[in-house]
Image (cartoon, rainbow over all chains, first blue to last red; front, side, top):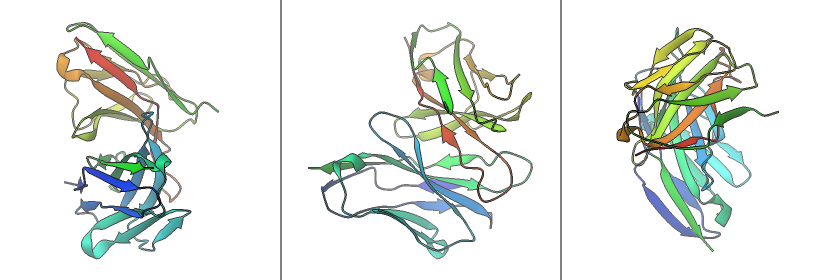
Amino acid sequence: AQKVTQAQTEISVVEKEDVTLDCVYETRDTTYYLFWYKQPPSGELVFLIRRNSFDEQNEISGRYSWNFQKSTSSFNFTITASQVVDSAVYFCALSEAWAGSARQLTFGSGTQLTVLP
Amino acid sequence: DAGITQSPRYKITETGRQVTLMCHQTWSHSYMFWYRQDLGHGLRLIYYSAAADITDKGEVPDGYVVSRSKTENFPLTLESATRSQTSVYFCASSEGLAGESTDTQYFGPGTRLTVL
C-alpha cells in the first residue's frame, strides 16, 4: 500500500528565510507520480507540481524548488526567501500508475507553514 | 471558465438527516473524486468515478452514496448524517488519460459540513 509521510506538522519561519518541507513516500510501484498542493487560509487546494517517477530532475519555479530523490523516497519542497503569503498548509501526495482504475491520490497529513513578518 | 464548483459551501444539519453535496465541473474531465478533510488525517478518498455511471469506493466510503448520471456532475449523499461526518468535503476532477499532462487532480473550493 502506498503511504506519504510529512513528519513536520508545523513550521514557523521569519520572512525572507528559506524553508524546506519534507515528504517521504512508500510505494511498491516503479511508476508513480508525486504532487504538492497548497492550502491557504481561504481553504482551497491549489496544485503546485506533479512529478513522474522516471524524472528525477529537480525543478525550480520562481522561489519554489523541488528535490526528488528516489534513493531516499523523498520529494522535498523548498521555498526560498519566504513571504507572508506563503503561509499555508502544504500537502504532498502520491499516485500509483496501476492500470484499470483511477490514479488515486494518497495524501500526507500536511505541514502548516507560518511565515512571520 | 468556472472549472470545478461545489455547493453549498457551508451546511449545518442534524443527525439522521439526508444531505447532498453537489459538485460540477466544466472541463469534461473523465474522473471525479470526493475527499473528506479532517484534522490530522489530510485528505481521504470517499468515492471516485471514472465516467458517467461508473463509480467505486475509496478509503472511507461507509455512510456515503454517490451517483454520476452526467459527466459534469458528481453528487455525494449522506443518507443519514452522523456527527462523525462533520468535515470539509472536497470534490476533484482529472482527465484520467494516459500521458504526462494528465492525471493531475484539480479541486473544488470545498464544502464545510457540520452535523449537530
